[in-house]
Amino acid sequence: MTSTIESPVLRTNFEKSVAEYWNTNRIDPVNLRLGEVDDLYHHHYGVGEPDLSVLEGPADTRDERIIAELHRLESAQADLLLDHLGPIQPHHKLLDGGSGRGGTSIMANRRFGCEVDGVSISEYQVGFANEQAAKRKVADKVRFHFRNMLESKLETGSRQAIWTNETTMYVDLQDLYREFARLLTFGGRYVCITGCANDVTGLRSKSVSRINEHYTCDIHPRSAYFRALADNGLVPINVIDLTAATIPYWELRAKSSVATGIEEPFLTAYKEGSFHYLMIVADRI
Ligand code: GPP
Ligand code: MG
Image 1 (cartoon, helix red, strand yellow):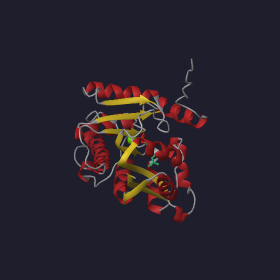
Image 2: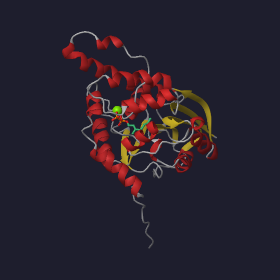
Image 3: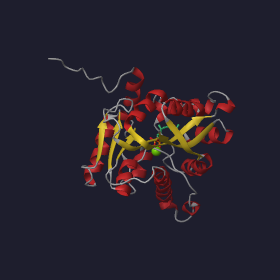
Image 4: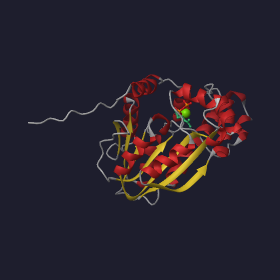
């Protein structure tokens, strides 16, 4: 009799330290306070014009108004990502690579009525996200797994679309897109929203290094995305620079009680041009 030895979910010391960060950094008031607005818990940033009238009006409810507005901009970011997945039908299956507390997956199921699998190397996040799906009575369609997105254990060709919402700075892009190319059906869609370093200004700026340090991540240069996509049969159809659309989110966040201190490095990096907030949409050929 032969037996297969399964590889562990956390394969490297780096992955272990990333999992440790997300397993233990649970009290993060910014993400829980925003999530409590309507029970959609995000781990990404926002886009769009904020309603700056939230800064005016009664002082005792000012912070509450800012939080609701930040949350609206984060949900708008997830909606924008979903807008680019193509014509998804209820019988399609999707993958959320690095699914966090599950917000984008829940929104995808709500919009398309299809099955969504999310994978995360944080067991805590997987548990949290599955509880959210159960609360919303969609656990039969939206499932979160304690798995590595570089080795998802999902069926080859099973995915009509895959997205990564600010998670690619935790992985090797060649390894990631090899796995996504395996999972996507021919003509399937991949959407990535990410922060990336600007090759034109040179390697990592001080602000980008501070962001890496803050989140235990490793931000890739813009060029690395297009090389790794092309090498793995993923052909860009749309590239949208969202930098200008995210700066107002950071400016508003800097004025809120849930600011974490990372606002200034983001604003500096975006404004000096060493860093972009990008959406890349690609087709599997
Ligand atoms: C975290 O979102 C996002 C990342 C760790 C990825 C880094 C993103 C880049 C664009 C470089 P979060 O919602 O957990 O962060 P915060 O707690 O600061 O809101
Ligand atoms: Mg957040």
